Length: 470
Image (cartoon, rainbow, N blue to C red; front, side, top):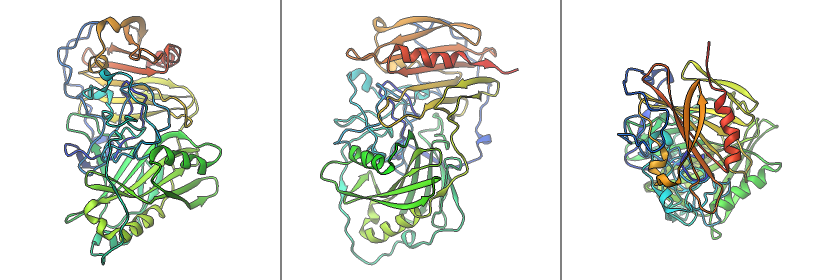
């Protein structure tokens, strides 16, 4: 969901790549987490010893970010320096939370990558690479590249014939991001799991949800994403800034309050005069939500481009769906607290950090997501547990001369961090290490991208709190 050597993009893109696997969601307990694999124990020093295989199951490149079949996003991890939550003025919305077509749907900024080496998109799966930058602003916080995409001006013509656009909403409520919000959908919609490919981790429903309705040659999709960003003092100003970051100056848009539920929930609908098109999907409706815990969420409604000859009906259906948003029952625990990973390891999280878990076939990646204010740097902190780790600096094109080793002790194991500063004109600091588990089979690959060495030291202290539970 988050990680690579760029300023982190936390927001997934609406998947759009035809290689993306989208499956009907199953109970999380059905996700295999077997520990039957066998591998040699890694050496405690990882500096200069390149893994024999850099793209093994459970850690394949392009696994964790941007997917597609419906044109919906994939989750990224910083491949460049942490991006501030502001997109360049010329940044275009991307269509996939982690991949609708690669443009920034949340309007959150992406910073240009200072070195071409870091634009390599072939990163290990546990690192959740973000899509390679394809535009002046490189990529947006959604993790979707802001590549130029055509814009469709709304045209209201013809008599509607699309059954999907005419369908009434069901009374039952669909859960978004594990009950952060609830929403209604037309009859027949399904909650779909988002996965880049069979070897990658499925994106976490704690941070994004995709609801899909398909009939004949029609498709309607709702994509919701946790922005991991605090709302400011004025919610309207927040949304205005996100829109300015997302749209070009020639795109006009209107903001409309469509739900005010006391201090619990506020929803602002955004209506642009031109619609962004990604692959074969068009974002026909969008809204930003301020939750009870003062965190921002994005929701977009997408239809196939072929359905845009019925623009009026598509807009009405999107309005009905967005108008059905209701407060959820789950809030984010942003106080200092303890979490358990891999069943028997505990970890203390600092204030403003939450844990996001993504499961692969025989591995799990845990992201320590920091909830930031709009203009703050976003760190990338990930913990991969499996049998086939891939060191990120290989995929980032970092030379051995750029590496430094820092000795440490984690879970009573002597280890070395491989550290490097990928940007000549910046203090941005990257570090990663591999810790063998006591079973002699699985290992922990920890990777951290921080604004500077001092910030890394702060996150390192959180890692030092890891211990085996009794």
